[in-house]
Length: 255
Length: 136
Image 1 (cartoon, rainbow over the protein chains, first blue to last red):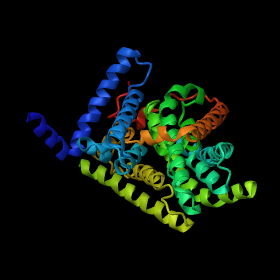
Image 2 (cartoon, rainbow over the protein chains, first blue to last red; image 1 turned 90 degrees about the vertical axis):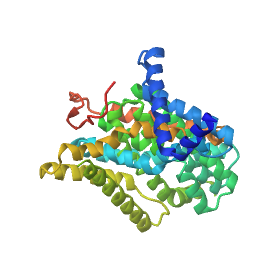
Image 3 (cartoon, rainbow over the protein chains, first blue to last red; image 1 turned 180 degrees about the horizontal axis):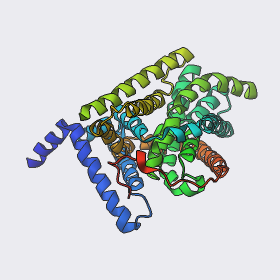
């Protein structure tokens, strides 16, 4: 009976429950970071991994698409980690940006952004071609998915891709976002992620706001606003180029 | 008052999203183009302007900084609602193209960042740092 009342209270106060649950995850990951890895793995990186593991658990349990947020008890996670609060918090980090640093890296950020759309697209489209998806529409859709998981379906819908190719394209973008989230803190030294400028290059090339924001958060919190500033243009640029320039170029190549 | 800061943040957010949607419409894409990035630029300019005019008291700043400090918890909640099952079910095409894209981009990032002129790097200046975020 007690459990039932407790569950009801938690479900009726979704966002508040989410604050408590996330607080507990962050506390636990800080403890694991200190005791198990002696501070070598950042607490935020562990917290994000725990989040992803819970998302997998929630997904297998409910068969839904929103991870832990599909369990009614944890519905508030959907609000707390949804696009609205995520973007609100990202914008707030701009308060810490030093305008001179951002200006100094403006041009290289734009170059990185363009490369960050072209390179993943070419790789994605080539892999699709080698796996037997050799028509221009499928290649473009899967290639666009390798840019971000929003560019994929937007492009696919615009050029008339089939639903299984769309699903594949979204999956490609999701896998990429998760790889960036988990891989960034591990590869931070190799990537040269130290300065605001390097974070802007990273934001442009790695794409996916979710991947960049989580990856930088787990590496160095101070670099977050610089990476996010560039990364937020990624989806827009991809949706602009995907169904137009990139599709026509693909069609010209494979016929 | 602390709400002034949060309201300033909200106003920049909304205006940025609005301008991003307008830009998307103008370019003929069915999506927002850089709305959040535009909002960030607006907030940077608002901060510079208000700072110069001396109308940015500490409490107003805190109204923004609280949300900046909530960033990592929000990202953890975001991770907890990713469609992990679909991502893992995508099979070899999804895995290979994602891995290839990440690998190529990682090498490019490393190449560009290695080329950065090594000027005596001023230790990240913490005058802008969020006082609510403890560096561990």
